[in-house]
Length: 190
Ligand code: ADP
Image (cartoon, rainbow, N blue to C red; front, side, top):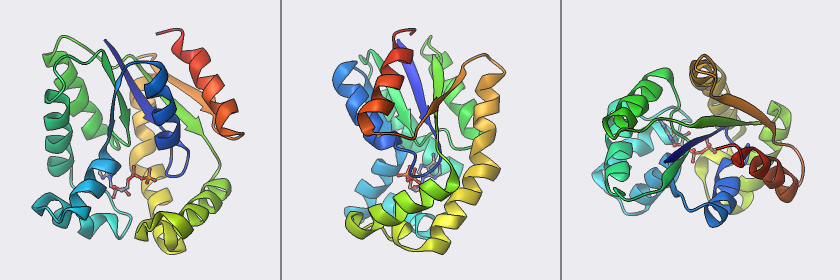
């Protein structure tokens, strides 16, 4: 099994690159952000709970997120592997993911971090906000909060997997195709 964490700050291109990687490697894509937005759109209790946090740019509580992620992994017992996008977002979630994969006789293969500076990220998110309809992309103060949450809570996840020799950085600036080629080069190793 190949279990890849596609990692990086909001706006670094995780979702876009994950979609391209899926087509090439037969992996199951799990994006916690997409799952939350699906629930929001359908007004489920989970969506209503998550909305309180997403609209402010805060993390949804771990208990909610981890249960949702676990259910999604369990829905795919025959997967060749997974691309985790937007998860784990703090060290506690990393520990939960490791425990879940261990219980299936598997493990995280690698964490690939897309490296993009904050100024470029803010510009990308504001541009996306004009068409995505995402409230959290259209307000600069919410974007700033998401970036600060990323630096404080999420970036330690890189170090967590780095200690196990699993983290690798990829330059996330350039055309979609240029970044995709960099990722594919790395994928050949797993
Ligand atoms: P982006 O990477 O552009 O911030 P996502 O689609 O990954 O967007 O996430 C959107 C929002 O959903 C986050 O700001 C957060 O509120 C919530 N969210 C997504 N994944 C997680 C997670 N693993 N833990 C907690 N909250 C999450």
